Image 1 (tube, one colour):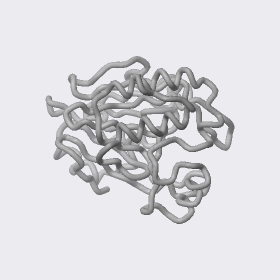
Image 2: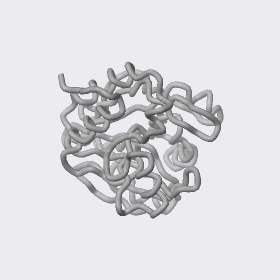
Image 3: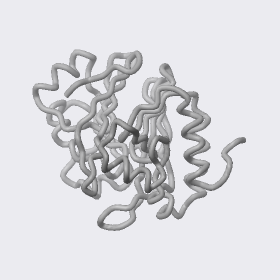
Image 4: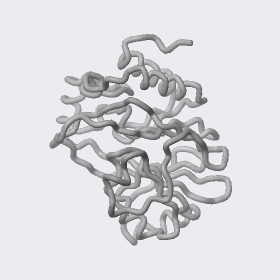
Length: 238
């Protein structure tokens, strides 16, 4: 694992991940709170050798599965830091009865007044088993002006494999921070998505860290708004 600093008290690490035969990659975000506690959002697969690298940053106190899909490494990461609190989202405890969750991020709130979180309502995703709600929670790191999302927006670009570049072009999300046409087609509760998107746009952020694709270092708020105006088919200007 290689941790990359992207702002003060904010790091990311990525690993390979294939979905529907395509290499989409997966990104974990590490946030250090003012009290020295660390928050691991969407943990990737970590091994014992990775623990000292993260421990050097602070104390792992929060391990977060941010939606119904990014939970595969939670158990192994919990074993590395057994004293940390494990957070999930609505419906995940039923899906992963083998895991112990200390709490659910099913309402808006914050950690230490620097890391805001918000359930993003209404967004659906197509899986091989059928269409399902993502039940995703999104985050905003106030000090660095960074929005952290997982599966509600992607940013695939020239750094991705040829296969994912072609797929992203077909699905209308190449080189742009936005969901794909698939999510647009299968999401029925657009009103709930709009309410959530408008709440996100009230946050003060410029950078966006997606779970898949490239980090948007600047102008991320405008890109997020444009992507969701396309998704919803309407303006999100107040």
